[in-house]
Image (cartoon, helix red, strand yellow):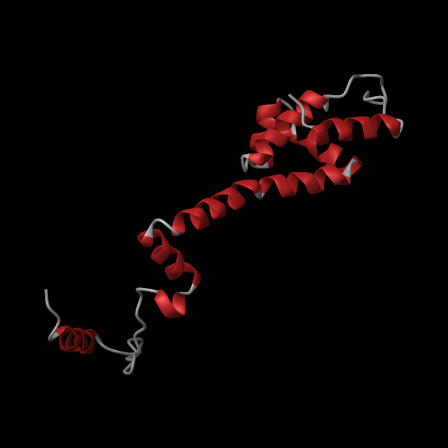
Length: 149
């Protein structure tokens, strides 16, 4: 099933004088059904390769179509953002009823204020480059003192 937008692209192509055939007279693979499949795949967040596989076309056919119809290329990029938008909306909708989800959201969005990670400051540094094996052993032993095993 084709969306109104898909039909609009197809009609616009015809009005622009594209009879939907290749110069040699071969019918194009970019039919309304193919474009509908591409849009469906892109709306699921599929890559170009995945969408082409689903629509049973090659990547070159997609890229040639995008060059010829830049508005489709823009729509493709918009459709790819749909899953992210839906996931974000789902998280925001769920925050009200789920305090754990709300906290997890804050831990990621406001790290300075809500993150569980702590920062450590390193005060002493040791250069190991010019040490002998005995010096390295002594340094390792002194560093490991007081460390619980």
